[in-house]
Image (tube, rainbow, N blue to C red; front, side, top):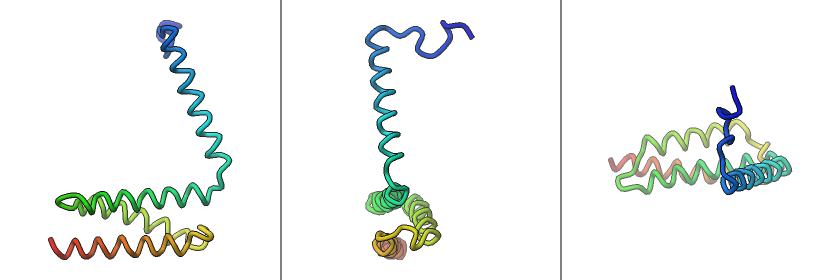
Length: 110
């Protein structure tokens, strides 16, 4: 591959600066994630799945199949990891139970 074909070879000065800034931001984000305990990152992902399910359940009409996938993914993490989520374990179990109850209530209405 020639230099002309490689990514970024035809960038202007402004584009090159923007690309460098974006790369620096990605590097910074990677560093912050690497410094965070895995437990914190995993719990954040579990809560992201909870929020995703809640968004689909609150749609008009509720998107039950989409919510179901998010809830099942959340359950897989919460049930499999159990106590490995540390101080957040009970909170994650409660959140899972709550979103499952909402799902069942909405499913019974349809």
